[in-house]
Amino acid sequence: MIKTNELRASVENGALDEKLSYIYSCGNETKKYADRFLSVIDGYSEVYGAPEKLALFSAPGRTEIGGNHTDHQHGCVLAGSVNLDVIAAASYNGENVVRIKSKGYDMDVIDLEDLEIHSEQFDKAIALIRGVLRRFRDMGYELRGFNAYTESNVLKGSGLSSSAAFEVLVGTMVNSLCAGGAVDAVEIAKIGQYAENVYYDKPSGLLDQMASSVGAVVAVDFKSTEAPEISKVEFDLGKYGYSLCIIDSGADHADLTSEYASIPREMKEVAAFFGKEVLREVDKSEFMSSLKALREKLGNDRAVLRAYHFFNESERAVLETEAIRNGDFDEFLKLVKLSGHSSYMYLQNVYASSMPMQQAVSLTLALCGEILGEKGAYRVHGGGFAGTVQAFVPNDMLDDFKSKIEAVLGEGMCHVLSIRPVGGCVIAE
Image (tube, rainbow, N blue to C red; front, side, top):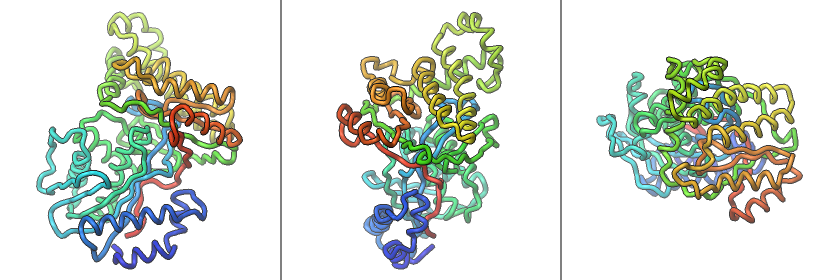
């Protein structure tokens, strides 16, 4: 851990600029990123008092490129970390307590003697922190008390997985402060998923945490969730003259946990028909030949359609990876469009069934289609229902695209992002 005055000086005098330039893919424009780390140093001091030593951390949001709702069925995905992140300043406190204060939120305080599940804290950040800490302890690491202050520019409710970024940030801090950095990025992702599933009570897959923790663009095969097959994919949109846009539909982000939970539940109902736990274990040809019996047994056509989406979408994620590696960008765009159509028609996660009059994502997709025509590609992004749309936009159309989208949805609703080459990481310690 670095003396605070020395750490501040290194940020101010540009000693970290090369590292920041690489992490954020920002060239020489590092000042706004350096200023954010100065802000968390100041935030820490304001909340806890000036510490003798500090460490700085970062964990990115993620964009799902292919494999919409395939991870929880042990399918294949393609995802990347983006240049929006949650950052933190942290220092030991000499107590048996962990305190984390996130800008704009109340402080979370966890007694390290109390790492049991608290059901009254489901759906709260403190549950995620406690779950991460418990998992590290169960793995045999001796926990130490620390204080942390965090700030985030990962858009909440955007499909960029602000919760997974926070989980990975906490895991990265605990790994550095209590485990000597011994836990790798894949295990940190799994720790985050454990915290979200067990302590936060949200039945998520592993895609979000994996993309945030590992970083860059990664192809992941979740056939074994204990040992997923991960490979990095070189993906330079600029080479093809395209940009990545994430569009906030402006939808009402009411509690949609039941909508999200219905997808893995219904897919597993189909798998159970074949005596399997997840759809990855079911043969697609057997599924197709059993449609009549399956419909009669389940009485739920939506579950059947969602399973159909899974089989094709998992295959598509593999084909997208191959298209990128082969330099066939037109094929990649075609596959992205097919993914979007499948999510809309078969997965049906573009609007909440409980609120059929509210279809902001559907409207955003229509706008993208009208503006782009036959160029580029667009699809519902992430979990869906009331979130965002992902679009791959030709650079020569970018300004016009952004202007027309925001003329309808509002200023600042179309975000132009970059793929970040680094996942959860220590900035300085």
